[in-house]
Amino acid sequence: MTRDAEPSRRVRRPDPKPVVVAEVSAEDRLADAWRFLDEGNAGRAQGYFALAASKDPNDARAKLGFALASAQLGDDARALWSAERAVRVDGGELATLDLSESCRQVLAGLIDRWNNDGKPIAGELSLALAPAADLSPTEPDGATMPASTTPTPEPVRLSRTRPVLTSG
Image (cartoon, rainbow, N blue to C red):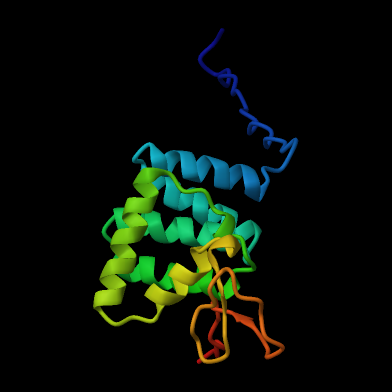
């Protein structure tokens, strides 16, 4: 090889882009997020709750999970914001949510704090989380009916009420 010869150059081609075979469902993201939260990895859980919420913006469970993860990370403002959004979009999922003991403790602490601060979300969230079986019929004046009493022809409503939310 002479000095005048040009050295050979190797051209590197970029790696092909990865191919996504199957999209991860919001349910799978939620399952992972709750697992991370139970394991004490609130930062990772928060990210997974955000991904689940982006896949299904009306999933109250993802928003409540994000609120709990935010609370564990010390971000009370984000916890409040996300809990309010969870209640706003809840279609009954929160009442069926089976929380671990550690999540129930975090949630109880948040509700107590918000209640002490006079924030309406404390009561709204408590009602949203109450299973339908826990809701007792009430008479129109608000008094709870005894179990042995036959309802009167007057209208009977459940004690779980939701305020009309307005944007603004």
